[in-house]
Image 1 (cartoon, rainbow, N blue to C red):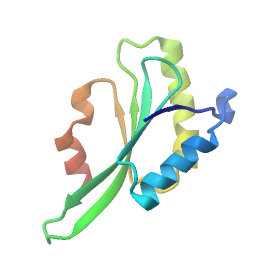
Image 2: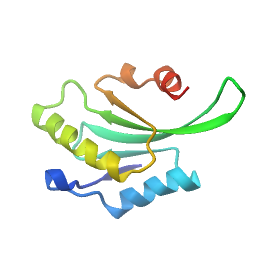
Image 3: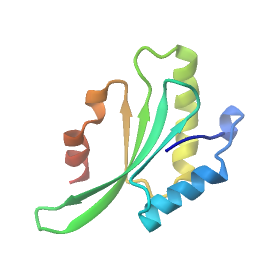
Length: 116
């Protein structure tokens, strides 16, 4: 699910649709992940990661991932960097944040290791 949002610090704001979708993911477990975008290359994502601890307990942690490919333009990277804090503040309940410019920086093993 991809959604645009606006953020006050950059002349933009987070839409109600973004907030509502996040709450559905967090509380109702309707969605596993949400992808937010401003332009065509960079993205933010929230991911509800389920795992089992070494004590055999089921847990869930929400990850906030900021994706800005290394090949992105400087202006786009700056826009995403300034909007990131505002968006993550609105999406209350995020446990971990990841910044990625390459797919290897947000792989399953990395997420699993961060969650434990």
